[in-house]
Image (cartoon, rainbow, N blue to C red):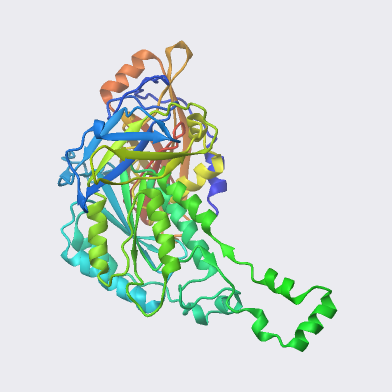
Length: 541
């Protein structure tokens, strides 16, 4: 579906103002070390968050203090303004209020210091390896006692959500067990592979299109996970792909001396020069770097688990790609082992104990350049893993992201198989058609503590939200849509009233034919581009 053009239209609608709670706007000099739900939302400062996995002799190091760390940006020491130890504590189940049957919420029930996403790759690798990887994934899930929420995606031509975040390993196992990867010919037998100048044997089992699909979908996943606060561990169960592709055959081997002389006479070009041009390799290093940057910006650490295991084929080049992504994002690679279940278990454990360091860069020149982060520990024999750095983008420009990109991200989050986004929290009441109103009504109650407000002249508190509902019936490719963007410009009295009520209202209506529908409901903060989504069902008689 071409959805971005639709959103470019609806993002410009501005109905009458709403009542809304606001949070006062900070200045660039604010140095609060930790942000909580009752503190201000910052829209004009650049707080850099770095998660650090610290180990000594392979064992997580606990008990470190802020003075045990030195943080440098481009070689210059920075003041650490926030420091938290994220220990491997058991998850907490939030005691949410009992909601009526027709009310849903995207408020997470599980409180955890990290989330885990397992990405089962069906694009890279051959069928026997993918089957073995699936068996090992089931082996892990059937015996795991999950201490952190886990979601599972399959990597096909697009991302496919197998199950949203949960700590129920049996439910996850059932979702994986019933999953059937799409039928694909072996890469060596496909028309595309035969037409390609690059080899698909020995070192890897994929195609140019497969590599590009993988990078595109990893970038999509980064955008999805950016809507979740805190650290995310991406466990990539894959054979991966090499950073460099080389032509499959040296053409010189297939030309006789007579053929070479004839070619030189007809083209006026030496055969050796022509051969050099035809042997140009293809590099994906720059694209991999861009994807790594997107993952770092989303606070995602990559943990590749080599599905190639110990096989007859050498795949060092593919392993190099895994290590590249892991090192850039602060993750870890598990390779050269047939025990993939152990790699999955170790990845989740490794990413659950870490330190979060926060700082405001001394360099306030937001020039878009990459800045390198270096962290040292005064403790001896300490091994530290963390992301390599960040791009110094202007915070205000980032919050005014290109409309096309916002529309694409929001529309993707409203797809049927997208996980619930929690950047904005809300409750939504779904009312079926009644005698008085023949339309389906959705009443949003958005948590104002998750919305960014701006202090305007005259003492007004301002916010902009887009509230959207997509209704999926029999035709899953053509949902019925209802959306608008609303402004809240509140004087102090109404602002305080909303602080007491603890929610911001927003309503949508849809006229639907008789049938059963799945509703995807979303809210977008137009100031920060943070999103929240949830699902519900309704029957129209």
